[in-house]
Image 1 (cartoon, each protein chain N blue to C red):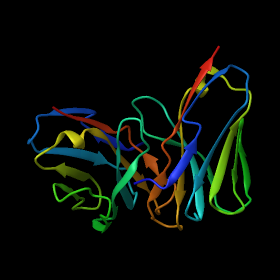
Image 2: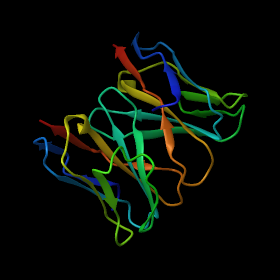
Image 3: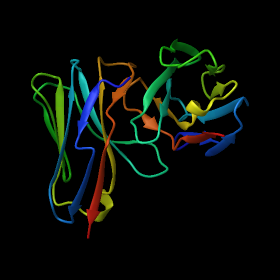
Length: 112
Length: 112
């Protein structure tokens, strides 16, 4: 597609619920990144994929966070047993080679 | 946590004024980038800097990569109302896919 598409745009989850956030990168982009942006802060790195391989997951805050990109295209970020501190905007970015990121508009997750 | 100090946190200026913001780091970066984020959207790249001392312009925007590689500044000349938004600096330790480290942002408001 023309840009990075994320869905849903907004998600409200009850504490303890599992959520899945989807990212459709730009077609042909090899690199895909997930970032978490808390209110009033800059984005913080979560994880990185090169094609289907997850090469860096050092930013995932706990084992409740899991990301996958099984066919090297669409990626899903899953959060299990959501907590209030998980409330944030989750940004996906893709890149042809690993630089020159294009960000999506994000998914705003609110845990109540 | 984030390793960049971005200042000022916010600015409220008159249309036509020049703006300056900067970022400092305790770490040496190989690349500095400046992004703008509008409400409900992902960050959009404004300027990328790849060499210490490099001075790069993009229209009314000028950014410099500090000689020590630990700082960068962004200037906006003759501000206009559409410059309103949040500006983020980001550092990258090396080329390729390495993650971006973002500052906390400078919130710019422009009074017509």
